[in-house]
Amino acid sequence: MHEANISIRLEKTLKERFCNLCSSLGLSTTSAITLFIRAALREKKIPFEIAVDENQEWREKAAKNFEGMRQSVANAGMQDLSLDEINAEIKAARKERRIQEGLDAFRQMREIVASSGAMEPTIDEINQEIKAVRHAIR
Image (cartoon, rainbow, N blue to C red; front, side, top):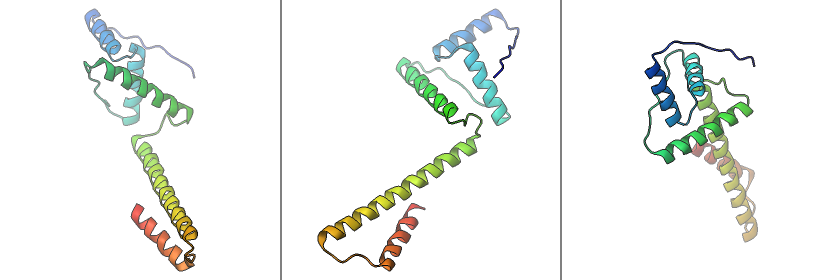
């Protein structure tokens, strides 16, 4: 990745106030401007408002979580996903988790039946259970 510089002229006090704000948010000035530019390009508008929360512990935790998420996204090669694409990924992961939970419950039921000495369920009964699980997770 090639880097480039941007030079802008600001009132001295405006620059100082912005640097102080970035510092209070746990960001460098460059990071804050880069966040703004990436979000503006992705959303094709002025994208967000960053507000200072006076709670230092919250800011530190948020900055740490943000950095972790940023690193995870970069490691997965997904830094250019839109919000809709991110939400679709989350929805798919949640659906997959619900399916897995349903299958786990079904396996537990089969183990209980087998350990109780009861008869194994028929294919029709198994298919009915699968349909019930699929219906429940929609």
